[in-house]
Image (cartoon, rainbow, N blue to C red; front, side):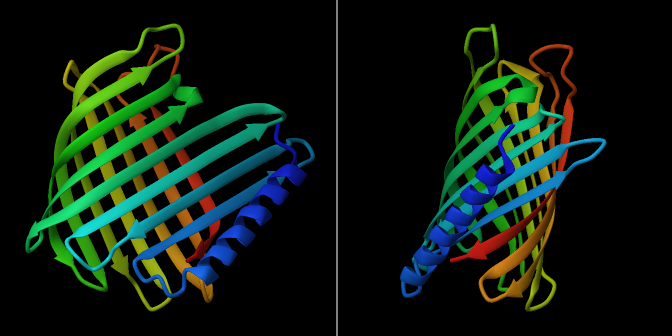
Length: 245
């Protein structure tokens, strides 16, 4: 179990680093992003620890090309027994073709100990359309094709083509609050019954300048787990303080 002191020191160190970077990057309008973290602990009849980290950055030079990177880490244990250990990374490059139509290339990485996923790599390219895109509301869908590499304990690396579809909705509720919702599914072309769907619903509200509180529900569903003893669906309720830069 990661000790509380180590977790606290790590979060404080990363937050201070992000704050320092945000000050240096104030005039660099091309980049924007955030770093967040949260900890929840209980003790007594049951000792629990929940720990999460999130990071995202967007490079938008106000041209046709936008680059995005996002990473999340979730960890939870109860009475020194690990229950959640999940890392997810998404790298994405979007290029506006005309109007609201865009093409994209992206790379997804997933490590999920309790789904028996040692690693899952999914490079994909595709096309999307923004039905609404303004300062208050964003709604877009996309679809693509690519490859997929997955490794599970005791099994050789699985290689397959892949098809993906995704949807993203964002609504500004006020000058201080934002609602977000995402849904994405990837299918193996070698076995369409083997799919992975990730969904999230979140609410972010401003606390003070550059500091926000984010509450998010995350759902991960794998239709064909690595073995029969693994549940298909995993959910997480995450609360984190987010520093914007």
